[in-house]
Each structure stands twice: as structure tokens, then as C-alpha cells.
Amino acid sequence: MRHKSKVDANQKEIVEALRKAGCSVFITSGVGSDFPDLVVGTTGRLPEWVKHNGSTVLMEIKTKDGKLSEGQQSFIRDFRGACVVVRSVEEALLAVGKEIKWSTEE
Image (cartoon, rainbow, N blue to C red; front, side, top):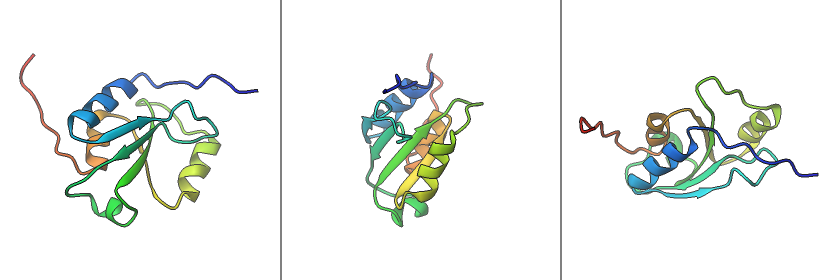
């Protein structure tokens, strides 16, 4: 029996910020089986850790106090590509080497 996937409250904001920064984002939170929430494609100046693993980053989104399940921990540990846990827009953008642009506009 398949369980309904839970979407973290900060996912929409993170997806919007990544797309605004020029990334391609595929939402995979409904895949299940502990697969990460996002597949993010990026170009440009990548962080060193991404360069070694390609230009596609899998992102598991968690809220500030969210915890990884045992299956999620295993997936991240065993996956041979770039996979990161992010808890905010800032962490997501930094994970793909995008500049954080702070706006003073309301």
C-alpha cells in the first residue's frame, strides 16, 4: 500500500527561489521509497562538492526541526551522486552555487 507523501512547508518557497536563480527543478516528493524531494539541474560556477558529482543535485527538504528517516539517511549515504539536505532557501541556493540576493523591497 502506498502512503500519501508529505510535502514540507518550505518546499514551495525553495522551488520558487531555485527556479528564479535559473535552475531547472523537478518535484519528486511523490516518488516515495525515500527518494529526495527535488531533482535540481544547474549550470555556471558550481560548488566544489557538486563538480565531483555532476551538475544535477538531489535535494531532500526538511523544515528547521525536521528529521531524516532511516531510509532517507541510507539513500543519501549510498547514492553515488550529489545529494543534500536543505532547510531553507539560502541552503538550497548555496548547494547549487547560486548567489543569495537579499531584497530590501517589501
